[in-house]
Image (tube, rainbow over all chains, first blue to last red; front, side, top):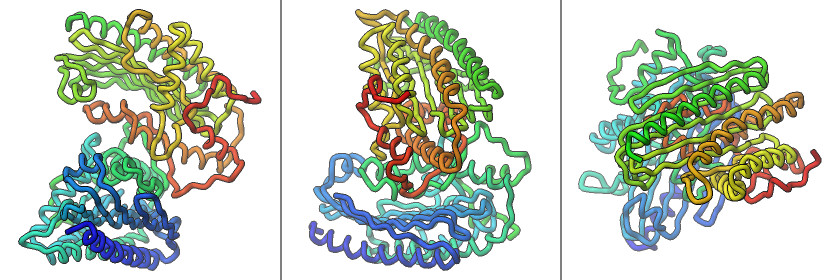
Length: 308
Length: 308
């Protein structure tokens, strides 16, 4: 594709992503029942976006749903990171994160993105992952089953490959633990023999649309679970780990901060509050200890044994 | 120096640093009046250290004073970062950070370190910087005057050069603000015509010994300042920025986490609690707004006009 075609295609995809952003916000507002999203458009020299932020809902403490569409000269730094040779790029995507009030409800994250170069190469990337403060095996199994269902509608190879990719990506080496129960992650997904461009686009849109539905179900199941000070403290400690992952390892965050992106929109992923304790101790056999045991790569979540 | 000499020298310096660590803890315990340091020795394959942690003193909320002494084969990754060619290295140092309970008292950080290679090259590095939640110009001026005094006793060129280095090092690009009012920072300081090895060692020891005295004076001046919920919230937001600096930019933290250091000791620098708000707003003319105005490089703190 030439530059003009690339831009036309990116414009079109950006429009579609933008409208899914609105859909996500509306489903989440409805599910929360009280919180509403503030809508904050932004523009910089490289492009712009819309950051939607909910604070202090009835279930959701802090949620961000970001849409962005940026384009411009393909610089040396990008070339270094992406390893392609081009003059011009366009990129659009949605990224979202939800931090609930209750420690019994997990944190969730979703991102889909389209990246195009004027040398004719373009690709999709994205992922969804779930980070429970307290692991619920049935919830984790259902979450993975949902993701497999979306994946299978496009390609039977997607779920097995992207589940492993998520295990490796959403991982905190200095803690030797995964961020949560994983999910799926994929990058540089290009049309090929087995799946065409429009299907890939449709796959990312389907994931993004499905995301608030998955979370609505979890919110519904968990909203009446009781908890106390101990669980709130543990939530803050787990949120600290979330901050560590996002600031030390997450490629989207690093790339965004380094490339002069919109800092406030990028860091909307951070929780309202987080805590750090030196050698935080959990009691043997406690729910906290059980959670830590499951923060591992390689768990077959589809077939994990659960009572619910 | 040969490997054996390097190790003898590093052993000797490590002993001296270890004894300064005890001194720092004892001065801080005395100044706080209630808090005591827990002493946690650790050992890994590359060496070991002692992590001293105070929690919930009367003035100090969380303080860490780390000593470490590591040595081993000089790997490819180190060569990449440090750009020297060698087979074996030894490194020892003290690093410390203090987070106070009161938002009216600043956070302080100090680090000194000695690094030696078996090719005969060795150097010192270190720094001290102050991060007020609320800037007090008189306090910042006195802090810089103290640092200048320590520096001047060794070389008149140290303070001017290392003050600028601190401005550039303790800086958060994605926020376009400095971490605080700076201080001094230096690295790869080697003996030369103007100053010998023993004087450099003495300089780092003097800095480390002086550090708790500086903070004791600040604690004393500020411990009775009143504050409320607004100031506590602002403190949490500023602590969030501190976390951003440490996890995204601080070279010691990155190097430590990447090289398989002791995670809990490295991350003792993080505050007990931190907060993030999307576009946190400060009122025009408020103390918060005044503080933000002074989070800039290039301020001549020695001559800043203050009422105290």
